Image (cartoon, rainbow, N blue to C red; front, side, top):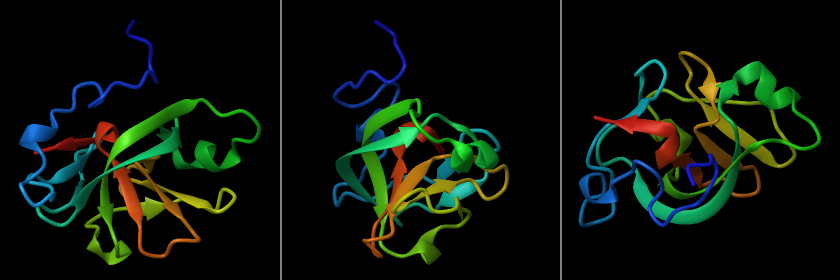
Length: 133
């Protein structure tokens, strides 16, 4: 019942009604779950639903080294920005195929999000991988 990675309509512990404004923007600051560093300011990201697979949260060094089968979650609720300079504090892993994973630039925990190198204008941050304040 409470298995990690099980998909639910709005995700566990994420109440979108308090996070998304009428125009689809983030109402609150987006923060790293581990160190509390600010990732996005209020009003800087658009809410989007898209199924994306993110490996399990860990330090940057073990994200890029994982080959073969990877444990993780398929997440659907994301904040999307179209310019990497919109972020207050985010880092990127080395390329993993055509993907760069987003991590906290301060504590290097992640991935908190996803960016495909084929799409220069879409940077996704999973709501379940961050805190809001």
